[in-house]
Image (cartoon, rainbow, N blue to C red):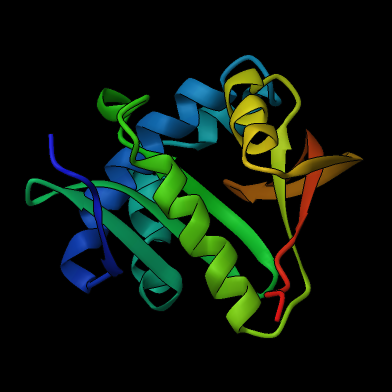
Length: 163
């Protein structure tokens, strides 16, 4: 496998991104968030969400195939997902570094993200890359016309570029 190539997302990437997001989300969240939220997170729901996110999405390609993506919203790394078939293959770290770079370039000193409490794999990954657990974050999530509270931890990292 070659190293991932990062680039801005294109409209034609978003169907594959939705599939990766759907599969990855269910792997990481099922059993750790309210059952109604899990039921509402269908592939169709992700397919509806991704087209409007092209401008704030960066994708990782490996050997010409979409392998993962990030979505940035201001100072928040809102989404980082890697195709579950490529977990452990070195795709996530360059995506995380790109998110940190983009947030810093936008003028923010600190980046943040939410990790569902039960997602030990992600929590370990972020901690390994210098993010710190800043405490409880009851994250409000709207899905299927209902608002759910997802039990999360807020992770933060100083992204200032030292001179």
